[in-house]
Length: 130
Image (tube, rainbow, N blue to C red):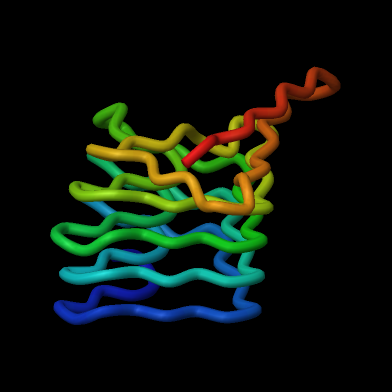
């Protein structure tokens, strides 16, 4: 991980990651277990392989009110988030090539999950049902 590399679970609330780089996975965060992100932004994060902003090896990734902007992964596996298990994303925005999400399983929530993807002026909203 460019900023955080941990073999345990990682939780970040109201954080900001900008311009972090990793040669392999997790430009911002590389975790060996679960990742919980609330109210945090990831801008211009990059990884040589997977998870430009966030990479989780064995634990689920949960994102609430996150912002992902201009992130990338050289291996094509999740410019924003790469989770080798599940990912739950709610109330989050991916813009200006914020990066895509790569996961084995995207999990919706009972209250419906609103996620918006924006490319320049174009906007696509996606609602994930449980």
